[in-house]
View (spheres, rainbow, N blue to C red):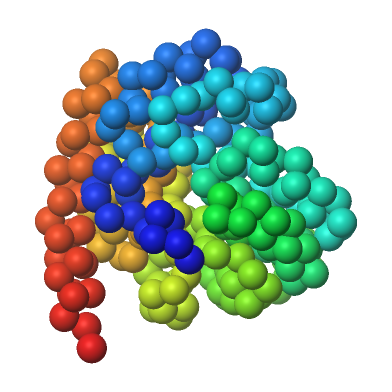
Length: 251
């Protein structure tokens, strides 16, 4: 993993989710927030509405392209090749697609050389509970399936995982320091949880082992988005410093 893929400063740990299909709104958010964060996340809704040209128009910070690719290996490899010209820093795919799919995605990503995106695997969607998994033939608890798919994805070439706040500590303990963990569902102290059932504060997520946190509406819908970012960074600051010191002291 290149040094550029490791978050150092606190602002670099913050990914702002530009959760809209509207090009003008996303561009305005990006312009206002580029000085304050590490990456912008663009999702499937935005990509389908605006295409590659829309991604190119979001300037100022590297892009986390959250497309959750899931298809046969050749198709996913082709999809990865298709987005490489956009130079996303991060790209998501479903671990449930299997080892062969992830291996194919990694081979395709490697053709970009040093510009290749980090491949982040999504394990069990947060909308699925034990009953939903059982209906698909998976009779284990969601946490068991998350860890199973996480190990499969990493062994097949994924760089890291997108995981819910309630999974990050478990995954960090089970997988060690090498797996990169990106954690959505982050709500600053005092913010409404919105449609997120499982949330953490920025400090709680970093303390649990998150490398990056994803925050959307608490920033983009704030009266002063820049000030909202600064509050998040202040919340993370003591924990980031403590983790950095612990890492230096580790044998």
